[in-house]
Image (tube, rainbow over all chains, first blue to last red; front, side):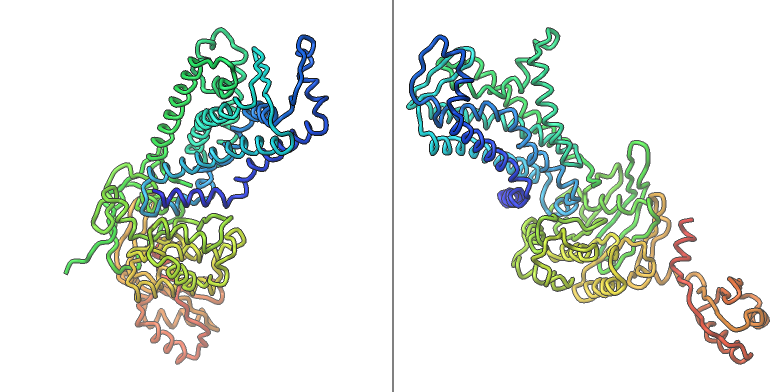
Length: 278
Length: 303
């Protein structure tokens, strides 16, 4: 099993497409940081205009934490497509290349192969998250240093600089959970597809589609919204509220776990019984 | 003495929603065979090969590898099989050696590097071992495909159209390699091929399938010698040659193919006699060529 996992990781990191996600994140984080370095006052002024009318804001408002929070906010919805590029290719890529004929005529069971492939995709997802949070914090620290974090959501929270890092840590852990759900969705579509483009587009379409539907909040589908996994994709920001909504957090964890279990089970059941015709 | 059976298909059927790919197929491959698996396009050859490798699940019937049903102890039986199924596909972004290394690791091959070196040498790809597979020609991929079947020293090798993409010299080399593997290493080989000449030259047993069913199975030489040999004769005077042959043996079947060529269906032993007869009658015999008997036989059985 470890042997197959190593092989799958080796294959992932030998494919040029694997680095698209890392390159895209590096580019965006760098551009946003440089943008704030050169035009920070103007950009922050635009963001905080309404606040300035009522509050006097003083201190190092542009700092590593603010930058990372802004970047997380912007990238969270785009991250699934970067994950789907690799997770969606795990099974459909083999079908597309015709290499299942090589793998499945070796003395390994389909279940072992599927498990190893899923864990390899999951490890890639975790590494992408580590890179996103780690790089944005590191670059922000190098350019701006640290400071208090102002979070403007339904309420305004000002979090002291020494109270921020653990929040990023938990946001990262929650991110692993929610992106594991995304990984398993891409993996499920990949088990049915024979071309990598289908799981990439399919995963993104499902996430965008469900997000739009839940945002519109039609009465007909309103009761289903708390049970959609997409509802909880941005729930990492719970950790940046002064009073954490624990009830929402627990629900988010259960919904993510339930969807992940369902997506993986269906993909395993389907692939175990699938005729390899590619 | 009983012959050890390496592969047995017993009344195997594969039914898809709206068509039957394989219907009640039965045949067996013995230890030491070079076994020809023949059939026209769409006959069910690839489906059968995929079923024996458990890539496809049969709808009904039994398949045994080395006497064990394929769904029992699958991993230990498949470990003794090497297979090249349809076209040779590899990871294009990896080198030939890396591709083989992955497959050797999956098969838990001991002395991996030595075995990779050996099979690359065997198929003549040592110099290209570090080249990415995406830069390979079809013929090179085919040779790499053969190499991967031998990595784990299998007892049975299944080759689906092994000469595909090879140039004439490559085809000859391939035939020689197959015979060598069979004779020197005792590997039992199943060849699915459209090149009947190839099968006729190297296979000792064969099955012909058509529309998913076995049409005939047996010893190649016995099946072919059951019918008379067909030859094509080219002379300077075909009318006169036909008249002389008909007078000497009215039972010989003759057909004028065109102004230059006549086809004859005769016993093998009669070929030199006919040649002598024509030369003694003053007719110049330019050529006597056998018309491939397996080709005739195949067309007859699958039409």
